[in-house]
Image (cartoon, rainbow, N blue to C red; front, side, top):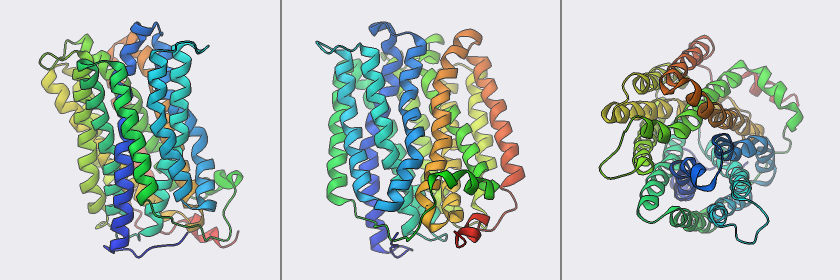
Length: 421
């Protein structure tokens, strides 16, 4: 793809600013879902297992679409596929409204929510992979961490805004009004993308086929390690925490003022995601000063584990707020360095597909998380579940220490062999 000038060139700031505006507003729809859908089970007669499926189906769909989306982005360029993705995301919350009031449609509420969330996964695959591909192609290893951090920070800040909107608007007006608010914001994000998103045209002569992706990953164990750590982080954060915190707050009597469990949990989750976003902004820039930006992974995972330990051992409002903030900081400390590191070691003609691979690992974790978290918590309790999360983070830390530490190279075995294809 064509590469804009790196550094602090105005063109780079314009592209990143355009991406931030679109993904921030688009993130509202994703945020609204989590403090609202888990509590809809009893209202709509949906079982806890099906609620977990609804929460995870968007990520399962994105899991299937990530690498094909990367292939399309590598061949077509980023603008048109990303705009389609933005518009699909913007329409999804209106599907939630329909799920609340099916009317004459021969589908039940659960099915409508499932279809809507699946469509969200389809659209977000093009948005997320396209954003990574765009940033990677317009930056250099010397400034990539900073711009990836800004992009991911803006992207994740939309999510806590959605959490707050979902919880507060639901408490004040109702579920339907919360979903309508998210839909309007999502469509506005699509219009913003249509107007301001530049076209980073494809100009590579050849790209690897999807069938070659396993060999690309095997050629450099660092790619697998980056993906595996992303799996653990997304499994625990987007999968376990965000799908259980509502019930955790209700079970432990954690409230804020006159807010219900839904409203309080929305604010609690917003603290976590805001912590992630703010850390993302700082850590991405800082990683550019290191010979090995992946070295930030282990301290970030330690903070991440501490948050889950607090949730398990101290189920109070004060401890919960500190815990979710630490979890958010841990997420923010791992994501930008790993994503920028992947951009450093990815061949130019396969950036989209390897970005898709990264998201496949993350979406697999996010998909499995709600399916495991809700039944596990029901059977064993939240304390046991969150302590198990600490153990899993420790495994990820060992993997990072053995594979990523001590590596100061930004040239991978994959890159070295790219010219032989």
